[in-house]
Length: 634
View 1 (cartoon, rainbow, N blue to C red):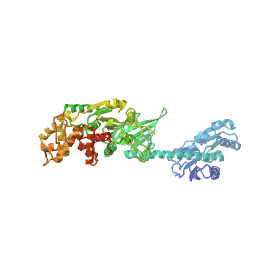
View 2: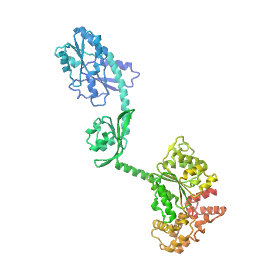
View 3: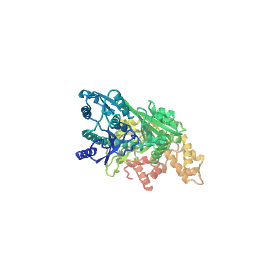
């Protein structure tokens, strides 16, 4: 039910108003979605600011319409227009009754429009007088009389005063047609008002759920919208709407930021002992300035949010834990690698790491990431050899709902998406099958991906670090690796030397490893010398495996030379291949023997890939690659 308030200066001011509304409702019954009822509210100049109106829409005319429209509130006011024909009809009645005397028409501006053109249609002279919101009708009647007007035409209060001072007068009445049109306008206006109100409420809801404070300021520097967060930050309430910025109890610097002609991005300001980050941008409609939008963030909330994001990334494991400080590089060969890597970390170019298994390629990749501008963003490590070819594409690029049998109901983001704004480390890049290399090339060229089964492109901002222990140039010559992909990856190259080429680092490597993992165990100097003279075909990973074995085998918390020989039963001079369990595969030259040794190790470890790789003195990725090479299912 829609309530219409008919605001008039006296009862039955508009003849048969209720009956006209009833007829209007019946006539528009098919198109009206609601029932309309009307209450008549009496209002005069003494109570325009005090009468409480409970209605959905206000219908009135003349000066009342002008006054009510300017009062605060959210009830729409529809003016009952007075057609020129009604005024002309009133003038003719007046001349018939009083003769061709000079007529003074006193009315609000919305009623006087067009009256000046009626002078030529009337026999009597006409003079018009404009009513103001301060109810100056009595003064205007006196003025009209002084200026020779003998008859007054106007509203109810004007005619009452003219009657009181014995001046002939006539009321401008509202015809049935005018009131009918006003009802139609009221119904249309209410529908439009409700739609606009709904839009405004949706916008306000969106603003209120924002974690940032938001203020809209119009070109006259008045506040038009404030969300709840901004009210909380500045201690405001809804009464601030419509106020000028200069009238707020803000510090001068804040007032200047909110009202000057400059735009700001993350301007830091202290307000009531709270650090704020303020951004301001102007809203332009075509060539006109419509105002400005101010965004306010609490610095402590930004810091807290950053901490939460970093924690979530850490909980997902998408984080690089190692830095250059974790690397040992006193030997010239490794010191040069670390210096180069530090320089490369300051760029966003692709990096290719080349080195044997166990030389620390991932440690170097993590260090580069943590030294770069992306250090606070995800670090995603992918071992391309450890993921079956059939799954590699969906793991890297993700997939949409229903992409294949067994796919998740809501799809899945790929590793490239997870690495957005950060670094993705593609280890064993040479193991990527040729068909997938073409899609990888597009990622490197366009920084765009498309999920498996999808039809939309997703932009990713990533830094790519690739690593391999193979000769990619040889693979390119043998058509096993795309040449264009190779050159896209090989922008910045780092060759990591094998451990046998920087033996000077072995004492420090052993010391750091033992102190971190077995802090109570002492390693005798003869053992360090023994390890420095050994041959490390498995590189640093091989060295750490032997250290762990020695720690398990030692007695009384000391590792002596006998324990070292037991853990590493045979060694040779530098550069000569060593024998023993730790180098079973690397010492084998016959493929069938190598396959048999891998099968025996897998069986012994119950097909646990980590334990098997440790027993054979190789990395998990190398084990996966050799299992694929020898068609070993596991």
